[in-house]
Length: 236
Length: 236
DNA sequence: ACCTGAACACCGTTCAAGT
DNA sequence: ACCTGAACACCGTTCAAGT
Image (cartoon, rainbow over all chains, first blue to last red; front, top):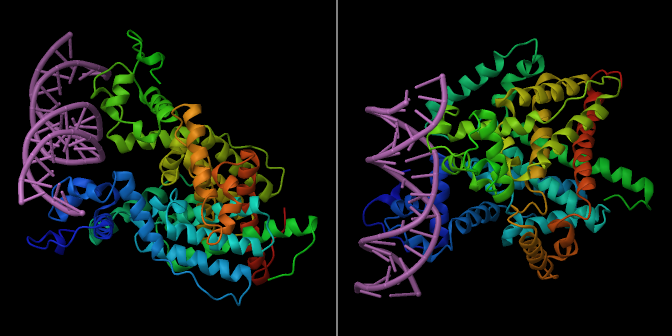
């Protein structure tokens, strides 16, 4: 992470975007705790107070990081398909965007409604749930659930160790797997059996696809309860 | 939070449990960032280094807090009902335990497998998923999903503002609702419509019950896919 | 065995200046 | 308009002592 920005003379014009990108790069390399205002200033060849021209305080910076992650999502325009297919696509986009920077994914959990790209995402999800036939209160609750479930999934990503260096990372994962696999098979038979899966997936893509599917199927299950009570809406 | 422990003379024997409980009390009153080793020491009438006899470092303390939260869950013994009913009950217990201390609930997200009560919880959930007919790889993935979804739900709890004092809290919520409700209805019609729900629920209990139901229904949906491919297992 | 006390290298953030 | 520099009140954590 002593990246190109830290070379003497590379005095790029400081602004929110540059600072946020630098913060994300630091976290990618060394974990979220490595994001400090002072470290950021140092990395950008600037004094400790310079970032404060662009951020009210550190919380504002963290909001900016969450916003940047969400800005990577490109919401599909296709309105041709069914609500559940579209929802699956949007949620997959969210997961894909967060997976690019797993060390800061957790910041999004409580910040979706604080930025324009987050609001657009939520609005899109809420619209699809409305299409599915839910009333506005359930739309808010189910929508929040869907978003936070998937953010949490990326946050707890098996094998999402900070990433000091690939070799050390592997060693850490190996240690973790051993500690699970060596639990008492009498007390924790199912954890021992699933130890490999819990530590790191054989296939991350299918793991996240399953997560999206679980959310969608959950919503469908709730919806079918709904349609037994009220007039059934045309299926999308 | 300048609680009974901070009175001069109340020198309770220091140990992990006392320290963890004090940390939770601090977070309940002032938010998770108020948990510092030094503050803890002060609250317990002890020097800054005293807690280090009982915790290797701050991370160890946070693990201890997560463990304490999970220890409040009492796993039901009843094996009389169907897997989905039992799973719903266990997950509801998890939610109930976390709701007691929403400001530290986030600590559990990445720490379930690091403590005995967390391992017991996971083992219980995994067993029920095995009963439901899933193979060990899916058990691990679906189990992780179920646990992290519900932890996330409590973490993002609408109205889970730290809690300085009830009056200030209400003001903050009001401000939040207004900022959502006053969004452009042209760009964010569904968010505006759901603003009340998003900021704080009319009924928290039913909100969390819905969360549990979404998880269960999701799992059932996946399971029915499963049973079309492999031999169907006896229900129940 | 358990706690103290001083010290170190860091933080976020303020305020008043510089250019 | 944008950045600097010094300062303040706080952190987590070390090390060597005390009792």
